[in-house]
Length: 187
Image (cartoon, rainbow, N blue to C red):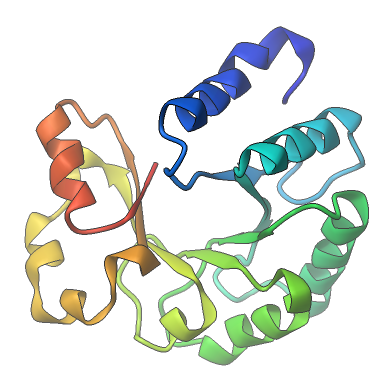
């Protein structure tokens, strides 16, 4: 939560942007597993980041295509109402079972905020890349990433700027550099 006692954590992002002004940064806003209630602290943070060219996207979970689309639509509407300066949405718990139409419906509903990041945490069918601007293809410890996965033929069919990895405990700089050769988005 971006309250006064935690400004250091949020200011680190600002510092990174100042040091690397061309580096695109996306911050996921997750007040309460979705939009929650309005918070002036979140609103101020979004506005501050927008001035600096840092994108913010709202967190919505799909429960592997099991959540009712109307509930997701309501969360999209609430995010837009509470924080009109958001740039898009992070859709978590995306399934890899070919429910393309489910996610396409979310994309279509998001309308003017149609920047979507999808997090299946694994490889998905190519149609998913038509819906999501960025697909999180792995979410795990760096040491447990299967490096052969990044070198298979189908992996190269999608540009690195559409692929991201959420990884924990990258113990060496060479690991981070190796990942950056394969995907453009790292957390």
